[in-house]
Length: 72
Image (tube, rainbow, N blue to C red; front, top):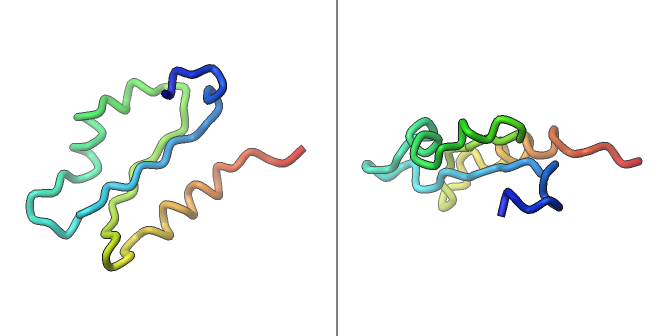
C-alpha cells in the first residue's frame, strides 16, 4: 500500500498496542521485524500504547498533527 503513487507523501503512524502485556514487542523490535528502516523517504513513527487504558494514544496523534502538510 505504501508503494502506491498517491500515497508517496503520506506519513505513517503505527500504534504498538498491548504494551502492558508481558510478551509484547517494543517499538524497536517492531521496527526491525517490519523493516521500517528501509522507508528512508517517508516520515514514520511507532507509538507504544495501551488502548484499554488510553496510555500514550494522544502522544502519537500529537506527532501526526505535527507532520500535517500545510493547507495551501
